Each structure stands twice: as structure tokens, then as C-alpha cells.
Image 1 (cartoon, rainbow, N blue to C red):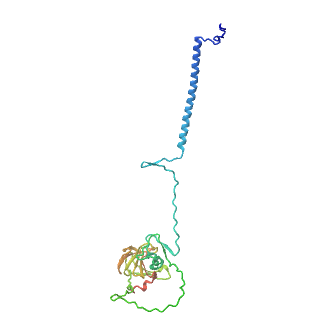
Image 2: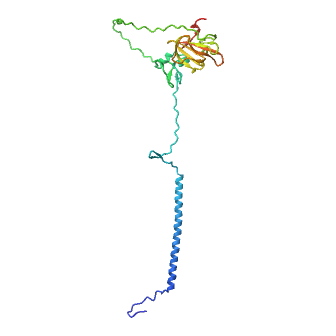
Image 3: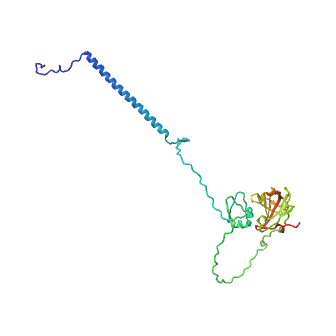
Length: 305
């Protein structure tokens, strides 16, 4: 239809909806929105469940990881990393030569010298020891002199004659005299039968054995100082060694009971022990005398009976 002005009227092209049609369209629109909202809710629910699953997996993975709890010390948090166990390495002991000896706990210089038939003064000199000859466990002692290198003497040249001067001693001062050791007068350490005599070529007969009864009185054969008292020497049982002077030592073995200690001063005839027995059960005393570390026959020094 064209109005009088010649303009076209298109209002007739749009459909005219009735009230019922408008209401139906509105209901359809709302139904579509509800369906879309429901789909979105389902998607959100699935996404939420997936997120929870992922978080759970992450937490489980963290629980299985290797970690150590921190250590809290006086207000500070210190990490405690795992460290491999440290196994201590044994420190090797230096090898001791055949002419050396490693001191053990309880050893004395006199005991070591006695067991090897060496003068204790020689061992002291080789190792730079001075009285009272203290040694300590673990110390290595030389049992033989160190060979000295011989140095050729310088060429001799004729020297001018020198005037002899005699030493003078101030008035009132006496010159020092060399130390004179008192002579020893040995006595029998116990009364009994001689069960075994001395034999220089037999190490098992380096003294004499005197038979008796268990518990018999054992006396010091001469005055001196006890330098060893114990059972550290194999084959002697409970042993006493007495130093009488710089040259002589005496030993009393296989005692049942020792009555003196190291360092004690004893007098000739003093009771120092009680007779014991050997491994064979025979009560006896093993008696030795050594001069400069070497065994000598006690029968040559003891009085005749």
C-alpha cells in the first residue's frame, strides 16, 4: 500500500502476534535459558570435581617424596639433611722391628730387660731413659744399640809441645771419689730341697728350683729395692724382682701370695712372699740371680749348707 505522499508502508510485512503467541514465546525463551543454565551447572560441577582430583593427586605425590622434618633448636629452625653413615677407619699400628719392643700396660723396664736377658741400663741408654726409668704403654723401645757410622779421623799434624799443667785442688776440698758398691752377702730365700739346678745353656734352667710346702716363707736373699711385682712374665707365675745394686738383680717366682709392692725397700731375710706351685702342682720356688742382665748360678753365690 502506498500513501498519498508516495512513501511505501512496510508495517504490513511484520507479523502481528497475538497475546497467546507472545506468552508462548516468552515461556519458550525461559525454557531455553533454564536448559543453558543447567548445562553450565553440570560443566561447573564436573570441573570442580576434576580440580579436587588434581589437588588430591598433588598432595599424594608430595607425601611420597623423600624429605626430612625440620629440627627446631632454641628458636632456630635447622634443616636436617640425610647424611651417609660414617664408618671409622682403623688406624694401622706401625710395624715393630725384631730388635724393638712395644710397651704394654703394666710393663716395667726391669721386667722387659729380665725377659730378654739384657741389662736394663743398656736399654735405658739406647732409648735415652733416666732414673726412675718411666715408660708408657705404646712406647717403642730399642733392644739393640744403633750402629754408629765410623768417621775417619782428620789427618794428624805435628803439634807444638805443650806445657804440662797439674790440676790443683783448692785447700779444704776433697776430690770426689768413685762410687764404691757394697759387697753383697747372699742368703737362702727358703729352706728346702734343690729340685733343679742351674744350666747356662738351657733357658728353662736359668736359676734353681727349691722344693717345699705351699705357703712356706719366702725371704729376700739380700737387701734392695722391689722393681717388679706381678704376673706379667710368662713361665714365672707371681714374680718378684729385687734390685740390689747397679749390677745384681734377684727374682722369686711361682709365689702363692706376694707381700711387697714395686718401690718397696726390703732387707735381707725379710718375708716378701709365700711359696706357691707350678702348673704341675708341685710347690716350689724358682730363684734367679742376674749380673748385668745375664743369669748366673745362684749356688756359686749362696752360702754352703
